[in-house]
Length: 428
Image (cartoon, rainbow, N blue to C red; front, top):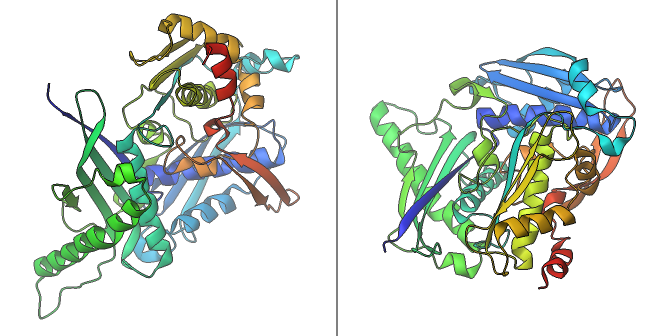
């Protein structure tokens, strides 16, 4: 049997689709900070010099949408006119309106535990044991490369020509048994200033080539060593001198961000989840409050999958849950261990045991994972899963509402707080 290759990609916080995601989730956070029972479905479009925010809201809070939008764009790094997308100068058009009473009727109940699902559909959660955070290695490395590239850009010491837009892609070689053998290919495409202009000594083509050589050298000697140094030794050993490295393979990448490509909320759902390794139900996350099971049930399914693998039930777990709109109980829940189960049970039997352990009604998920808090802007870049749970203080200021400082838990669905319960239930 031969080895095989598997590839995943990531995009930076300055990618136009991610700019849209972050604006949508920042608006959601602002509503939840001032009214935790807010119902929000917020979509954002970004293009040259323009932001359009549309969607449905039911809330007792009133927010300064324009201020929130401009703050997010500036924080990302689009704060200069030469980028053709500037948080201080872009137009912001709002088309938010009241939530449909028909949808709301299906969700809200007199008894909160009977809260119905905000939509029909199926959601997936996935985990595997090939990385410490139970994520697929190609996606985990893709995210790490861009987080480090962003850190370098913000430090403004090395690679000072960097602009916010970037993409990465990592190909890992696996053994026939599905174990990572080596890092096969890395692709980095990063937006940059025109830091070597054409002059009398060099043509435009020559200047472009000089810029490309400098960026490639910096990726090889600055970015990659910083990333590799932060990896477990077992992953560091997967890098060798046969690594194929592509840096800005199209050449110059000065025009980028929303000026180079229109961005929309919800267009990076595979980047947001498992890089193609786990399944995806098709529903986007950003801009949606937790009554939308597209988001909350996907987080809950990841929580289950991660705790199952961490508890030793299987090396790999794909959890599917599905709902009917307006109905609290899921129509189905299934765990697929992909023939890696370590317990003497079928996947159907494992699924039944999981159903008994985890209440998957929407209201129960919201409470278990503390989802009615302003915790979502942080999810909108570098993946919604595989992140580090933490407690932070966030302050929300608005000319329409009193200032609020809240202590919130981020990425609660990544906590390994159910492993002991699972071990007892499965006799481990």
